[in-house]
Structure formats: C-alpha cells, structure tokens
Length: 381
Image (cartoon, rainbow, N blue to C red):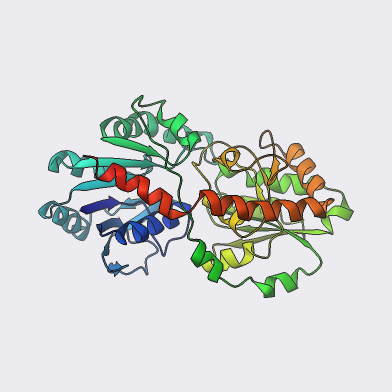
C-alpha cells in the first residue's frame, strides 16, 4: 500500500503535530506501508528530500510563514509547482491530510479530487483558532467556515485525535469520526538523559514547566499572571520554565520581565525539551479550547511530571482530578494560582501524581494499539 501524506510541518520543525506525524510514519512503515510526505521546507536548512525509516520519503517544497507557525507554499516558485505536479504522475492508494486550517489540507483536497484517490483527514484541533488580535481571530474563524468546512465535508473520512476534536468535527460534518489517540515513543523518551545542568542551576527549586507554541489560546499569559499573584515566599521556592515560540513570545517576555522566577527559553530541540521535562516537578497546562490532545502534556506525564491542567486540549481525557494531577475549571489566573499553591505546598501529592502518570501513559498510549486501528481503517476500502 502506498500513502501520500500532506503535512503542514515535519521534523526538524518541532511541535506536537510534527512528532505525531513522524512517529505515525515510523511505526506504520514498519508494517510494510510505503509513505511519501509532501511538506514545507521549514526551517530553511531542512533537506529538500530524504528517506527515513527505509520507506518514508520526505519531499519538501519551497515555503514561507505568513505569520508565525502558519506556512504557505511559495506559489510563485516554479519549483513548488514542479514538485506538486510531479505527484500526479505517481500512483497512491490513499492520501492523508492533517488539521483543516493548514493549506496543505487544501492541496490534499485538490489532489484527491483530481486523481480520485481515497482521502483520509486527521484532525488535531478542537475549536476555532484564537490569535493575539480579534481581527486575526475573525479571519481564522471565517477560514474555518469556508475552507475548513470543505475539508471536513469532502474528505472520505475524518479521524479525530481526541473526544474534544470529535466534538468540534461534528460541528461541520455529522458522519462518523473515529477517535484514535496518538501513541508515544516510550523507548525514545526513555533513552534521553535528564538535564542535570538545568536541575543544578535551579537547585532546591520546584521546577514548573510549559512547552508549546505561544498562541493566545495556549493560556500561557494566565499562567504568568498566576505566578505574579503568588506571595513572595512561594515565588522563592519555584522556577517556571517556558519553552517554545510563536506570535505571543515578545508579549509574554514583556509581562514576565519583572518576575525572576519566570524563564523564557524560546524554541529548543526536542531532545532538550524531553530532558528538561525529566527534571521538572510540575507541568502547567492552562490552555483554552483549541488543540486536540496536547503532545507536550502527554510527554510531561511520560517523564513523570505532576500535572496542573485545564480540561482543554484533551487534558480531561487523560487527567483524573486528584489522581494524577489537578484539574482547573477554566484558564483564569486566580484559579491557576490556587492550584499552583496547593501543589507546591504538598510534596507528597507531587510524588504521587508523578508515579501515577507514568503508569497511566504506559497502559493507554503505546503506538502499537494506535497503528492497529489506523491499519484497520486504511485496509477497509
């Protein structure tokens, strides 16, 4: 079986969607599936093409970011059209797209309808995108009601990566949308050494971390404002590490400037991110509705962090309040501050949540189970 996958980003670009796509391809290719990935050449130093895992071919087309973390093809580039049109000369059994608001899903629609190839769409979002300005947010919502609508309606099947995503998909398309949770590459995570240098730098501190793209709906502003509300003696006990980039980076850097316990790292390689999660005590997930199932949240659980989380981005599907973390009703600074205070004053709770998270993830989020479900769908024409 030959698959053509249109992917909005792919490693070495970092993010949850990227690791989901790469690990999906890795484990699916081990089952004898030939995969071709058509993806933007971002970052710019990425190779134009490469072969991974023996039978996963990556083709990267010329692209740019019109805004942070939103890539577009260089439509004026003859090379883009040459690479895209060359795909029409090959025979694929199925084509796959990921996330309706990226233009690669529109490329999939064009390809699938012209070539009359079965099209499976994998959706990662659970709400309309919320950006730093009301104008941008309105444009994003209009895009969803036009092009997003077309993606959901014209695909042959929409797969949801969480219950929250499925609920969002049903706003556009009432057909069945099976839920398939992503897996985690536990073996790769296990091999990464904890960042003892960072641990030593913040010796005797409770390390709280967040990893992700810095958009408004990630709720990082509320996390920072919550830290500001803490009394001085509690601030002296903690450090809050924010890892990631996005359109809100400079704004978040500005509002956290006077807080010595808040450290902004920008983008880091994935191995470095995992190594920091391994020395973190608490992972703070104060997201608003938007994402489907946060990869960073799952990786934090796998690395043994205690979790403080809103129910959004699928958190309420993996976190049981007072069992493996604390759930916050919604992303508000007062509520976040209250849960941070509760956890940093109870080190026994932190230990218990850390232990319970490792057990829960190993049971429910292996790739083997997920790949079996995908294979059943792929082979069921």
